[in-house]
Length: 326
Image 1: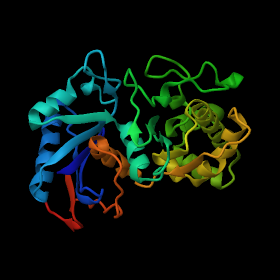
Image 2: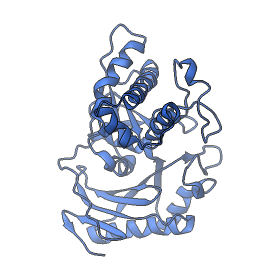
Image 3: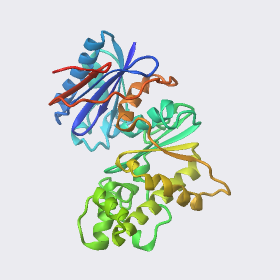
Image 4: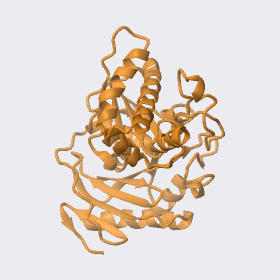
């Protein structure tokens, strides 16, 4: 059987089919309708289209924002609020007539990169998403670690370690706590920090451009971001001591982060030597959908690169390199 993965995003749902070697057979991306019943139907439509176009039936895995509560079996902690409190996995399984495996989207990212991405071959891999928010996932010997309570890798909702006086108590977080990492080490956190220091609203992208042009306040804001990411990752290293840290999300495209963060980590880890590699994700935005497909099995190595998604209105399809109209 082929492996079908879906990445359930806030505005888009991507589906992909992988063969036994991890090569793409097909990729589809459609608008997320943003309503529960319609979203369940959309996922079913995408799976049906994948199986129709490939001529093969597949296993189905899906990566979602949030996670399933082990006590209720219902979705929780999702920023797609209409998922919370709903039996999303069971409703999808019923609608599709087969078992569906579901995991947090950051966990799917980590699994993808640990199995056949930038963290391949690592005994312990920590996957990090640094974008609008931040998240993480832990993979040990090719197996995703979700934990007893289903919150393994929920790095973004830990407090900033070794805080400076001016960093406490920290911004309020939507989770109900204050000072969570997500409020500091994200594109949103960089914007907030720059605004606090200068009184000026700039996007994270514009702050990075200004930093590279030698603009003093932007350079200082970026220095604070680097220091915070380094401290945050040092605390992870002190707990799980990963072989590799793979960084994805929008900030993974900023090479200065990959260049400078290791030096900060090395100053904070509880060790006389630190050799963990820090690398950008191999599969980029496709790691989520690949990891979702991999929820059914681990350990294969793909031989092909990611085919491009070609825009086509509301639906985008690539089938073995051929663009289909819809």
